[in-house]
Length: 278
Image (cartoon, rainbow, N blue to C red; front, side, top):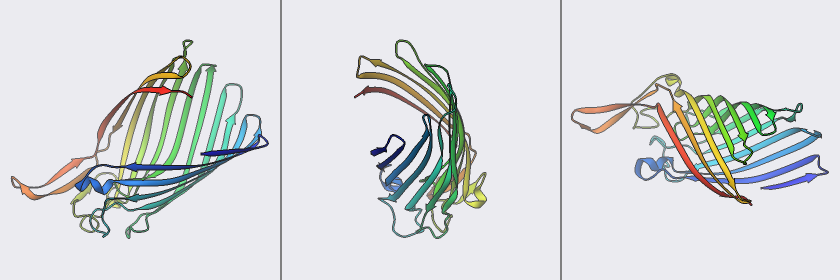
C-alpha cells in the first residue's frame, strides 16, 4: 500500500490485495478460488479533525479447480466494484462519527441465470470516549461479497463494541452483533447442478437463502516490553436459519435415495496470538 499527502489536507492511498482459499479435493475443489483486488482512498481534511472520504474497491474472483461447462454445480467467476463516499471525523471532545454511502456492482458474466449485484452500500459508526482509555462504539453496515454458496451474499448488520486499556497497558475488547444475510443465485436444481433436489426455507422460491446471524467477540492482549505482545481472542458465530437443502444419494444406501441438510450452525474460534511490534 502506498500513501501520499498533499499539504497535510489531501491524502491519497492505493493498495493491492490477494487471497487464495483452498477447501480440498474432489467435490470440495469446486470452491477453491483466488481473488485479486485493488483499494483506493482519497481523503480531504477540511477541518482539523474532520474529513471527506471517497473509497473505491475492486475485486476479481476466479475459481481455480472447477468446471468449464455449466450444469455441473460450478461457482462463477466475478468482478466486483464498490464506490462509497462520506464523512469521517470527531464531532466534539468525546464523540467520533463516520458515515459512508455508495453503490456496489457484482458481475457474473458466465452465469446465464444470474443474478448480478447492483444496489446500495453503506456504513455508519458512532464512538464515545467516556475516558481517555475507554471506547464505546455502535456500528451498522450494508455490504456484499462473493459467495461459494450461490453467487454472492448481502449483509445488513449492526454491532456494539467496548474496549478499555488498563494502567498496566493490557487491552480488553468485547462486543456483540446481529446480521441479516441473504445468499443470492443458488444453483438451479436439474439445470445448473445435479447435486441438489430441492430448497426449502426463507427466499427459496427466488433461489435465495435468508439467514440471521449473531456474533460474540472477546479479546485481550498484553504488551511485554517495547516490541512484544501476547493475546487471546474468542469469537462465536450463531446461524439460526432453518433453511433446508435436499441432496440425492447415488447409489442409494439402504433404500435411502436422498437426504436433507439444515444449514444452521454454531461456530467457535479461539486464537492465541503472539506479535512483534515494529
